Amino acid sequence: MEVTAEIATKPIVLLVDDEENILKSLRRTLRRSEVDIVTATSGRDALYIMENTEVDLVISDMRMPEMSGAEFLAEAARLYPNTIRILLTGYADLESTIAAVNEGRISRYLNKPWNDDEIRQIVEENLRSKLLEVRNQQLSQQLLEKNQQLEMMNASLEEKVAERTEGLKQANREIIQGYEHMVMLASSIAAMRDESAADAASVKAAMAEEIARQLAMDEADIAAVRDAALLSDLGKMGFSDQMLRTPYSQYDKDQLQLFKQYPLMGEAALLGVPQLFMAGVYIRNQFERFDGSGFPDKLAGERIPLGSRILTVVRDFIDLRMGKYTGTEYEEKQAESEIVRFSESRYDPEVVSVFSSVYQQFATDGLRENEQLVKSNDLQAGMILSRHLLSSKGMVLLKKGFQLNQAVIDKVINLEHTSGENLDVYIDKGATQV
Image 1: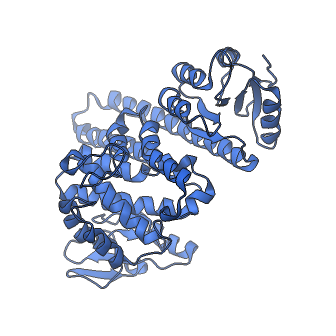
Image 2 (image 1 turned 45 degrees about the horizontal axis):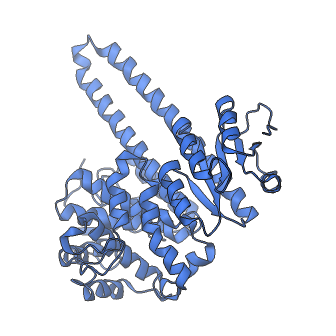
């Protein structure tokens, strides 16, 4: 056992491998990162270190004597769930990797040989993500304490009952927003090597949510559909940069096999989060086809979860628009026509019918009845959006139906000024509220 880090305020990274040369190589790779490094040559030694040292992130090799990487990470997840866990594995370790994902709830896995810049980037980004999570927890705790104080102060004052109730409602909204922020953060991490995918995930989620709402799904399922759309590419974290840039139709045999695994890896990554269980189910079945010819479970018709049927349609529409299938980027109408063409074979006809009306809310064509295009300087508090407010890259900034206030208007104006782009703000002429 080797312990080489001193107590410090820097994040502590634990490296676990039974080969000293691998540990030395990893240490050299991370030398430029602002971290303190601890090393161990076995899973048992690593657990001993973690018992006595607050480790922020651990990188473990898969193949080690006595205790494998999967076994060690599973025990680490049980004892120290807040520690970020990254697996270092070979291409032949797919079954063991899946076990590590399921039992060890790893944040990421890396193949040998690794890329030095990539591993530094992954470590630093995961540590930043953990810092944000800790800060969010601290803010939530502060919010909880303030609400408790407010409740004690107002308990005997009947005239403040309404104010206290509104305060609790606001706290609940902020907690929900914090959860939504966590999902958005996970979505951003999944798309960190593909900027267009991050913007597309936002549009995909908004479209999927609107379709689910029009199909009368309950609010919990609508939220699960939205989360599934945001996190649908989570399983692609193991893809190489070259594979992310390659159109699906040009994948070789090995790439195609890895591609078919990514919905399962996406579901597995969410197993440890009960609130995202249904989102994981929808992600798993997003490549099922209505005629039963899809994967991984060969489900057909209504045996495919409705959330997955919705996700399939919006995902393919976005992927066609981005050129993911053949390398050719489809126009909006071309992509919509392609979806309609495969209704009843690939897609649920009912979902396609709703989609054909919903996708137009994200188009940039002419004005519709009872709406007007308003410049940001002419916006007024109380105006209500008739369409989603989109960035130039298609990212949803504000949702359709949002009521503007002066603070939001000021932010829109400032965004235009800093980005140098003019936003198209569509207002419902008959729904302005004061």
